[in-house]
Length: 68
Length: 138
Image (cartoon, rainbow over all chains, first blue to last red; front, top):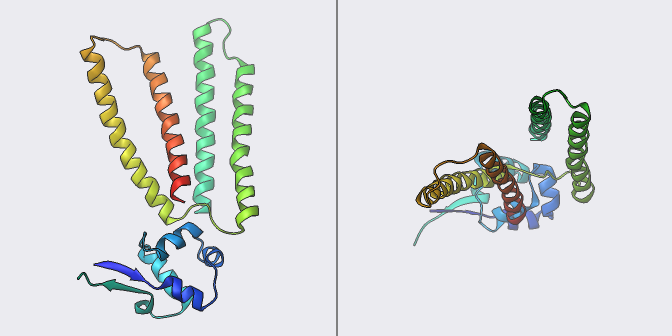
């Protein structure tokens, strides 16, 4: 089962740029890009930081995609 | 992360200095009467100092260009770990193949100097490879 995230949608809804988010979370912009494109799954620590940053429930950001 | 980078850089600089001084001492031993060459030691210190300034300048440039965004994060570490594992196997298999080939060609002994030069080139290649991997993946 693949991990799917809605970081891009939530980020755009809140009007936050990748650069701003990278600065606030102290990660590289490339990492945000990789996470948004589902090329990289963040560590649990970073995932929890992202959840805290957006202040939304974790299920709204990350969920498991069932294989069909 | 920043503190770790500083510690790593200081450690690398210390290693270069100790290695350089050891080299100067060994050259002194080889030359016999001349002893420890202070001019050569000065060249080692100045070279290391100039080399140490380069990452500081690069860091300053990065900060000017990208603000407070870090150079590396958890993904960079993961990529470097994968690169290290790949390099380990390539070197193990590569050196094994090289030794077998040399043995098959009838070479029975290798000069230690040659081994040192070979290792030196390997270290340089690993460093260049790490730089390329970092640039390509980020």
